[in-house]
Length: 201
Image (cartoon, rainbow, N blue to C red):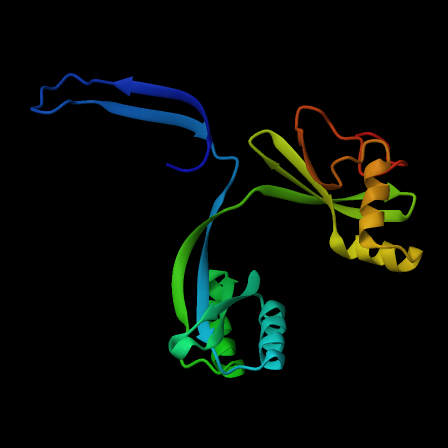
């Protein structure tokens, strides 16, 4: 059964006689988190330099990977190694597999299909005393979360000569800005924004 908000449940016993119980249960609901299919590509590496791994990861992201991450692992003969994992759209899997084979020292790439549940999200621009800030808003099960985009927070930190932590605190301290660091709020209460100067929606 998909992840959904159940609205109605119906149970029917039917009219025919069977040796076992003849019962059907139906669910009616709304799937507020769509499910998509992704491919997980991975390989173990113990003879690849940090420069090669960094270059490969950056190239994979630029070539359409949804995510790339590296995990420290222990390999045979007790040698330290790295597990390189790439999350890919199905249509990009072959291309990204070829890049992994070309730009790392692996002799093979494992591949498996995964179901991925995604929360609805959108990007809005909010006016702050630092200027426009892009904000990612997500909604799941009636709970909204709001977070200022990293690139804008980093830009403000460089322009103002302060730390990223101070920028986030400044945004949080503004009226209606308590969600800018990722705090959650019931969606039935509309947000005023991420900043002091925002006009409530």
